[in-house]
Length: 240
Image (tube, rainbow, N blue to C red; front, side, top):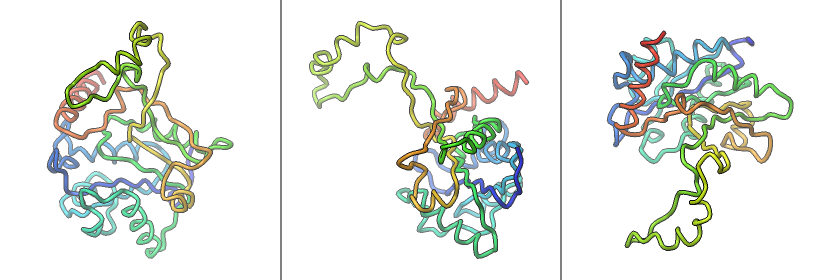
C-alpha cells in the first residue's frame, strides 16, 4: 500500500531531558541509538512517509538525520520540559511544516521508547485506518496479570478490603478470567485534521485497537525496561 509521500507524516517526539534514564532516546540500544530503531521501522513500512523527529537537541537531531529521518527545525525549550505534553509539540511541528509548504492528510505518532515495534505494525495500522468506520488506530497489548488480582493498599499494607471484595476471583485461574488490554504507546494513527481538531487520537467514536504481542510492546521508561527490551532485541537479532 503506497500513497504519495506528502500525504503521511510520521511524527517522532524525542526531547533531550529524561530524569529516570538520562539521554535515553540516543542511548546505545542493541548496537544503535535507541531512536534509530523507530526511524528504521517507519522507513521500512513501505508507506512513503515523511519521517520527522521533533527534538530540542542538536545531538538528537544529528543522530536522527544520520539514520534517515528529517529534523527541519528544533523544538522550543518550553515544549521539551518534563511536564510538557506531546500535543503542543505536534501542533508546533505541523504549523512549522505548513510554513514550509508541507501539508499532510494522515499522521502517525511513533514513540522512540518502543524500539521493538516493527515496520509491519505500522503497515497494519494504516490498513486498518483505511477501513470503513475507522477514524483512529491505537496500539494495545494484552496485560499479563488479571486486573481482578490487582489492588490499592492503605498505608498499613492491609489486604483485608481486597480479600473481602475480590475473593471470588482469587479462586479462578488467570486463563479463566477475561482478557484485557492496555495502551502500550508504540503507535497511533489517524487523519491529521481529526487529531488537530480533538488534540488527541481518542475520539468519541471510530477508535480501534491494533493488538500487538507483548514482546513487541515494551515501552522503555527506566533502566530495567531498557535492559529487558535490549535483551529481547539482541535475541531477535541473533535468530535472523
